[in-house]
Length: 220
Image (cartoon, rainbow, N blue to C red; front, top):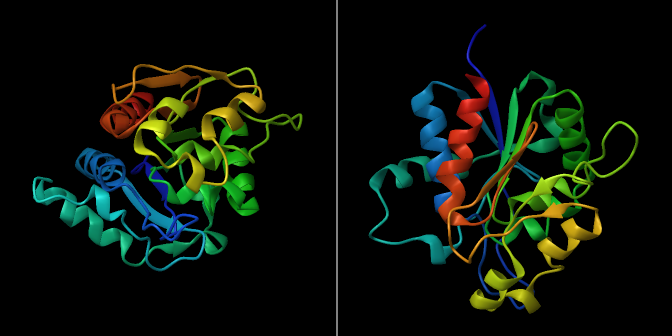
């Protein structure tokens, strides 16, 4: 069978609407990356533009495990999405941070990739603002892949708490609902993962490990 191949797509966006630094939320990238690596998967990290995927400085802390720093090295030189042979991968995963709201959510190539993954029964997964990667994806009849599906993401309540709602292009919760999703939320900052067929979504940073574990479970 060979190793399972995981495609992680991260943001290239480094600033919010007012210039406030943003990027990938490190925990949401590093925790799943480490789990995938320890499980023996073949991991490729890509981004819309390739090259460096910036880390949100607010997710950096001296209390972070050293393993996270090791994983962060793979954000230094990501592959360009347009140059991928994406059909070789078995699962796709989008970490969050506010960055994906600016580039990943608008990227038509990513929308096509996610559509293909979903329609061929491959795992489509995301956490926090990572579900921004799902908004352009369509199922075989042209409907949004989230239509009628139970999903979650960073919530409006959490957005209000971090005071970033006015600095991002749209509300992810609202957009998913507009696309017909059955949006399921838990209390702010609690671990919460929703699994619907081959679609796995997590609400916030606390949900990153559970999303990764669900991906591993799907492959067993």
